[in-house]
Image (cartoon, rainbow, N blue to C red; front, side, top):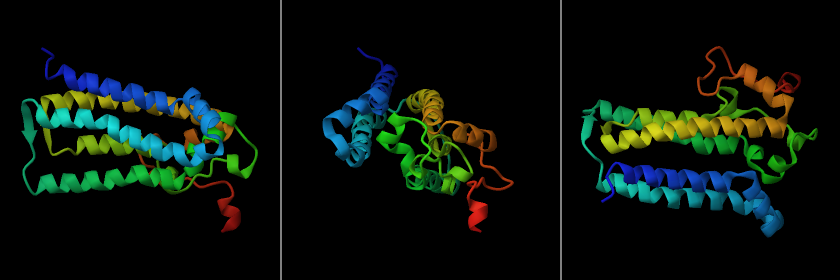
Length: 208
């Protein structure tokens, strides 16, 4: 019989494998070849849908077999933590909204470009942190107002996966934006917001 602790691990590994495969450049090249120009509009919604569907088995297992309870945060602190999770959850869609050009398949496949479309265009949340997705995920996990054995295992493995994913994503961004992104890395931390002030685009001063 499969242990209640190994099942969520298998579910998470399966999710990570599918997530990584569908995010890979070879897969995106295949999508571009099959769908053509429509791929730019169809890929991200389809990718998000697949991510949700593949995480459901893990969520269901944790719901049915949470494991031994390690702690529960009482009210009103519990609701403050949930509020913090909600705010952190907004960072992910905000990250897409602030930098849609980063996720364009053609731009990812073509590498650094001199055109305006190929520039980094730092704005919004990216002026404060380089990886709002990683920050969002970590905060949501840290502010969970209860903890069980199985959930802790999933959170620890998820943290490792998110960090590895962040490192891989940045190597792709360096390939996509070149020296412009390398300079950006020197100025903005991966997940710790810059308290002294946000980073601006080089052209911002000229427009002020």
